[in-house]
Amino acid sequence: MQNDRESQIPHEQKSYWREYKDIPSYPALQVNESTDIAVVGGGMVGVISAYLLAKAGKKVALIEAGKLVDGVTGRTTAKITAQHGLYYNSLIQIVGEEQAKLYYQANMDGLKFIEDTAKELSIDCDFSHHNAFVYANTVAGAKQIEKEAEAYMKLGIDGELAKDEVELPFSVEEAIVMRNQAQFHPVKFLAGLIKEIERLGGKIYEQTRAMKILSKNDPVIQTENLSHLSCNKVIVASHYPFNDFDGMYFSRLKVNRSYAIAAKVKGNVPNDMYISGDMPSRSLRYAPGENGEKLLLIGGDGHATGKSSSETIEHYYNLEKFGNEHFGIEEVPYRWSSQDMTTLDTIPYIGTITAGYDNILVATGFHKWGMSNGALAGMLLSDQVLGNENRYAPVFDPTRTKVKTKDAVSFAKDNASVAKSLVTGKLKRASKTVDDLGKDEGSLVRVGKKKAGGYRDEYGQVHLVDTACTHMGCDVKWNDAERSWDCPCHGSRFSYTGEVLNGPAVKPLKKIETEQ
Ligand code: FES
Image (cartoon, rainbow, N blue to C red; front, side, top):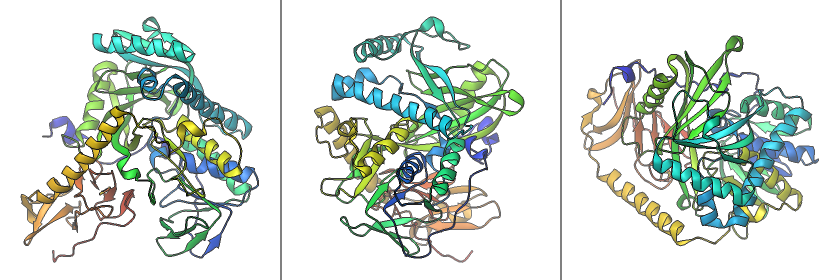
């Protein structure tokens, strides 16, 4: 149910990061081509991998389904930190101390890579060091933070309890700091690398959607417009693997959406980075605004994709309400949302896509922390392609088999939930007809004796699609915050005209033609 404030929230999405326009454009791949390494996906992982491989003298071609740096990387909070909320106490229980320590070190190496590379290439990407805090407002949350502090001690993490250092306009029960973390502008950073890839002789193609990898030994990528890219190895950096062979990624990844705003506020904007340990999650940092002012960036309010219990637009309202209560919002020039994936044991899958497919590498499941993990993935994958040892490879190996009982239960529950979504979606009846749709409204509608997904645009034109997701057939659900059809099963998203916005689906929703 919308209230007055929500009805004032414009539907237009504008990412703060995508305001930066100095990103080169590239043509689509229209002919058949061959290369040493093909990289699929023009975000953090794809661009860093392509840069490192081109720098090592490899012939590289990077293909992107839409525009470069327009996916998850252009819709992040852009904290570069190994502090992933309240994480290490639970990670030790899942994978043990040794692996947890390596995970921390790997993320710190990711941070260092971004800092060193920006310096080396003189990329002005607003990089700056800050402490990162997790805070709790409840007694239960404070207890969790104390346990996290013990985990920091065990793992040798540079940080400790630090309630007195918190500079927020409300009191907290407890807080923990991780020192010397960082933030930056990811689009400015990657734009610098993209230019460098080109200078090093790498090829880049936009509007080139990979549909299939035709052979596992001598891979050939078939694209949507039926051009082919032959290569020795493929790096699948498309966020969700578009072709997972027998990797069963769709049943090993949980998909979530989360929201962010950047606001002008009356109160003081904190200099450091914060995230709440309690629910609902709130993530804070500043971002440089015009004339030296600081915008307050607030992230959070996540939910499983296609499974929001309320109207999706309400999530922006919740962030604004929090910002207004504590900082006094004057204006919200930017709003955006993003999609993240989490693996069974919460450590990303980075490496060979599945046993026996040594020429196809993947990186996915960054658990909302795609900057440090993404940089690490780029380094790890390029090392694997070049045959270099990397001590983190076993930690992130997608073919790792050790699944603890807790994870196995979560696995079973998720698959049960997918099966339920498949059935309930099919049984759901449409209560509206096309005529009931107001302007800028989307809903399940009755079309004759069938149902369809309908959206009436601002000019009054109705767009109808078949709601069966082209990945595995679950019914998609309307997302009113982004005017998209979202699949509750594995997170594919489609525009109101049916085009793929996020995989694993690669084919558009079927359009339904009617006389209007
Ligand atoms: Fe798998 Fe829709 S994303 S069925």
